[in-house]
Length: 449
Figure (cartoon, rainbow, N blue to C red):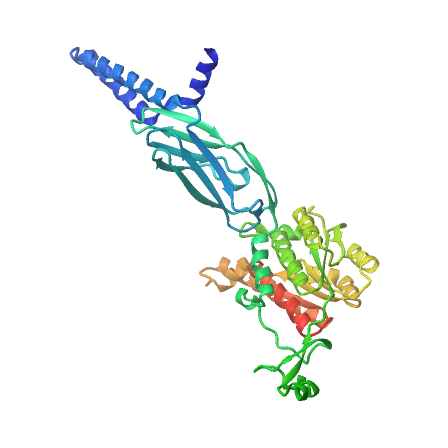
């Protein structure tokens, strides 16, 4: 008996309507103190409210599990920085229509404390509701239980269902963007994503096949012997060189913790590295990875093994800054000992001042003497907005002057790198993936490696 009472008190509560009617009755009882004829009427109404509540509670408790809920994420993992869709499915097994309020306990990282869905469910029906979340950091996200508050159309009692036990979802680097770029790369439609076409200078010496001439083919590649045999124009088809090593060097020092639109620069670099690794794999190259700060954190040797892409993803999933100053001497030593073949190195870092670059320039020059280095650093979008604004007082003019100085130094960094034979990509965080892919494809197309 005691167990049943505990169950009832845990799951049944007064609804807002009942509280409102109870407050009205209290007011009427006060009025009945002055007007005694009201007392029997108010007492009768109190009995009606009490019996109505008990009847409503009985209907809700008659079936033990009359409401069922299920949470259905679109993917098994969350994609960092992207909009992820999650579906809630609620089934009503009551013999009557009910009103429900659904409260999903979202992970604390989302900071959503007022999430609820209100709806009405007919008897024996199932409904689905989709909502979207956008994670801004990698790691574990714990979803709690689904709380469903059920009322009949009378609405005096409310039953609380605790459904669908909580579970954890891992948030990985942006695999949704990865799927988009992967599909475009396979179908040679990367231009649809903003990736530019680069005109070939000459052609690769790696012969692939002889094929029929079509309009647009280079007439210099016509194979006259094959043309004579087939009695129609045939051309030699060449392909880009393959099996080249492509390393993403991800700086995890303190400068990469700077946030833009909720994501840190490190997260942008991680997402771009993952996409670049997959596109390089599709282009028959060997993707690799090195993460570093004051020490080498992790290294994935460039390879084309079957599990290479999974290794890259798992390594990037755990990439976190330790707020230390980046040590390029350690990076140089690692490259000299572990990467002996000339490779394309894309260094994701950030230099805010020219002096910051000059402190590391000697190391970059030594690396560039053995490899093709592309330094990818970020444009300060907030600085750009400040430059475009019209100053209205002396203080804003002073701010804009300082902003112009920083913007000039950023452009000086590009010139300084070019002067020493180091390629660079100066990009906003939002355009990082597209601009990095453009540079990679440009290197391959022009045979710079």
